[in-house]
Image (cartoon, rainbow, N blue to C red; front, top):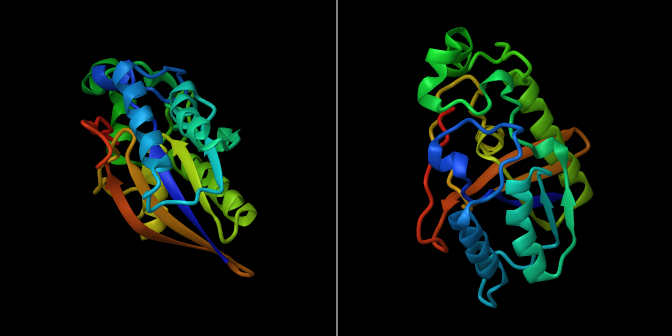
Length: 219
């Protein structure tokens, strides 16, 4: 029994433009991000939309994801469920720091980031392994709940990277190979069985509904 997930990154925020690390900091959308959310909602509510029907919509509880998801939920008149488990990684002391200034402010932590050490510690934050477990468990719980349905999940760039790796079998410590675009539509399938969950990738990086979407996600 499988579940198809439409994985969407939130729309653009001021910190995306400034290339700052957001994590759990609750930064809302900018004007472009709100426009992206509107275009996403238009795409998913269009009569010829290939992703219909959507049976459920879930979002990270952080404002940038929630605002993006609300635009779709309102257009489709579906309830919106909020899930802390699909939040961005908690980047602790790195939150708010520009990507290109990590080494200047926190050289040891920047090395943990860049080497993708699964158990490397970011003070006041999560390890990559903890982040991976949290996000994948949240999606598997949704898969168990929504078998044979199509579900929209609005989340964050780092969480999307975790989901892409789970769907492709790519280890969490290897360099990133795909982009994580704001308001993009990305599709994975999770199949539940008596022995566990099997993940697979359907497609990735659809931004045909947008005028622009930038990839600011570094790691």
